[in-house]
Structure formats: structure tokens, C-alpha cells
Amino acid sequence: MKVAIASGKGGTGKTFVTVNLARSHMHPLVVLDCDVEEPNSNLFLTGELVARHRYSIMVPQVDESACTGCRICADVCEFNAIAVIAGKPLVFEDLCHACGGCAVFCPQEAMTEVPHEIGTITIRQAGTVRLVEGLLDVGKALAVPLVRAVKNYEKSTEGKTILLDAPPGTSCPMVWTIGDCDAVVLVAEPTAFGLHDLQLAVDTVREVGIPFGVVINKDGLGDARVADYCQEAGIPILGKIPHDRQIAQAYANGDMVVDSLPQYRQLFTRLWTSIEHLVFSKGGSHG
Amino acid sequence: MKVAFTAAGDTLDSAFDSRFGRAEKFIIYDMENGTFTVIDNGQNFQAAQGAGIQSAQHVVASGAQALVTGHLGPKAAKVIFAAGIAAYHADAKTVGEAVSMYKSKALKPLRDADVEGHWV
Image (tube, rainbow over all chains, first blue to last red; front, side, top):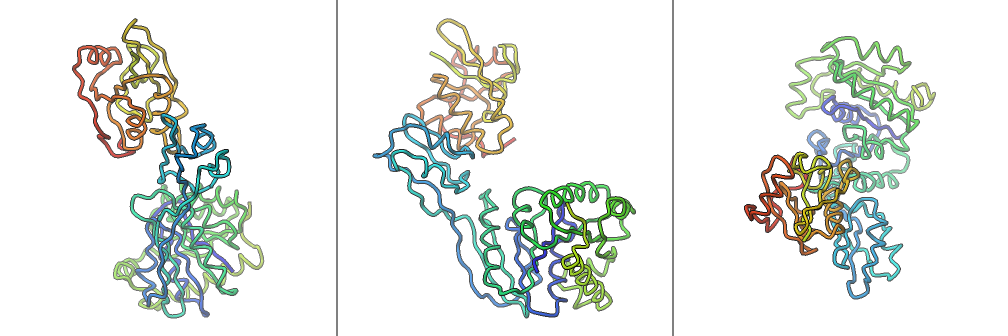
């Protein structure tokens, strides 16, 4: 079972829900922190380092002696990463999406692909939770390949439950994170901003066609607009987490709420039941 | 000799655009006979990425030997200088004003990128 925890708006509580769900799971499970621009599940899921390695994408390198300056590489590139000036290609690695098109179409075979490091993948073991996170290097703009590399890890997980902490927003890194998941949990806060960005996320998840439901976080803040919207749109509300100062304090201390505030354990246990219902009965909202 | 100016419109009265990669137009002004042509840069105005690089290639293709703009980012600068184009910084209100400043040699040459990418 693969479940992504996503949202439109940042700061609604994706990581909070992810790590507390992980901790309250009965069996060993895997958390993939796909928020590669700011992975922070590791602040809560602390444990021993299992492995760490650098991650590279393949970018083109030009053999100027073979290049005739025909410009085909620059025309092929959808990402404006190659300019041909005075008969010579200039490659901008930071813009390259590593599609390999330029090397395929170069009539002179003057393009070879060489590794270009963009980030680090770290694997930790925190009790029964295996945490895999991607961390994009500062200044690098290309999150998707690293998200895919983190997701690639699931191949070695032998049917374990996987939680994916998604990046905020609704652009490519989020879409790549939720793609091929069995269910998506959208964390929303009950405010005007929260509703606006939830609607964007709902549109995106519907487009991808994955069962989903909503967790209302900081319930009691704002008003009932998110709950009303979910009811009208036929979206199941999987759980509500109260706007409670004790939760904020525990979270700010780097504590798991399910550890330090026992009254909330049942909330996350019930959330698991709702998620399983979503996955196995396909009872959620579809596209 | 032709000189490229970043512009918000099609005439010399148009506002001079201090942005390079996401300038709406380029006015290519011929210093010998005082005529000019306009290159639409709308595609790069809205490009997801690499606007500076593509805009610089437009300028190279126009045959301009000099560029007058507000600021130049590192990737655009790499292309402009690789093509041997001289770049100048102007703080002008209109394109016509920038042309006059160029003619009177009142402009400061840009020897390198003077801003980070995405500086606006």
C-alpha cells in the first residue's frame, strides 16, 4: 500500500501527519520524504544512518572537434538548456532535464552524456520506520529526477506499507510523488487560503485519478468552509486534528504527538483505518 | 552598426525595459541610417525557464553588435559575450532616450553579468 500525504498550500501539516502516521503504524513501514527542496521528516524520525549517496543526472558534453554547429541540439532541447553561438553549442547544465534528446538527435554523435550531481539521498532507520529522503543541492532547480530516485527505493521494500511526504504545491514534483500511489491524503487547514489551495490540489489529484480524502488540520481555527466544500464535492473527511497549543508545542520540540500526547493516539489509529478503507474499498473521491 | 535595445513596445517612445530575458520586445536600431526593426520576445516573456538564453540568441540572430539593457543575468551574459556582442547598462525611461545615450557614449559597459538570474 502506497499512500502520499500532500496539500496545495505549504505548512498545512503534511510532515506532521506523515511522521505521526508512521509512528502509530503496527508494522515496519517505509517513509519516502519526496519534499526534496526541504525534507524535514528526519527532524522527527531520528535514527541511525544506513546509507547516504550522491545523486547525479546525465547531462550533455560536446566534442567540439566533431560538432558542425548545425543547431539541431538547441532546436531539440525543450528546456532552453543549449545555445549555439558562433558555431559552438553552450550547455547550461542547471537547465538540463536529462532527457538525452540532444545526444539522440546529434547527426555527428558529438554529444556524450556525463554525470552532473544535483543532490543527496539518505536512508535512516528510526525504530520500525525506514526513512528515505532526497535533498536537492542549493541552487539546483530540478527536483523531479531526485523525487523519482527516492521513489525508486520502493522496489526493495517487499510489499511494506509506504508513506510519501509530498512537496507542497501542485506542480511536477508533487504530481510525480503522488503518481502511482494507491491513495492520497490531502492535508488542509480550515481557512480561506487553505480552501483555495486545497481546491487546486483536488483538481490535480482528480486529473491523476487516484482515490483521495482530506484531513483537516488545525480544526477550530478559521471556519467551516473546508468541511462544507468537502461535503458538497463528495470528498471524504478522513480525520480532523484540533487546533491545540499542546500539539504545536510538542511539534516545535521535535516530539511525536502520538508519543507525548496519548489522547491523540487514537486519532491517528482511526486515520489509518480511514486510509485503508479508501484504498481497499475505493471508497474515496475519484477523478 | 546595429544595436539591440530592450523595449516594452514597438516604437522609440516605448518604455525602455530594464529586464533582458523577459523583455517584451527588442528594438534593433541601425546607427548608420536611423532605422529600426522590432523583434517580438513574447515567447520568452512567458518561458518557464531559460528566457535569458533564448533572448540572447534572438539578439545574436538579429546581427546586432551591441546590446543596451538594464541588467544582464549570468546565463544570458555567457551567450552574449560568447557571440562577441558588447553590452551596456542604461537607466533610461524610453528606448529613444537610451538610443541618444548610446550615441553620446554616455553608457557604462557591462563586462560581466551584473545580477543573479531571476533578479526581478
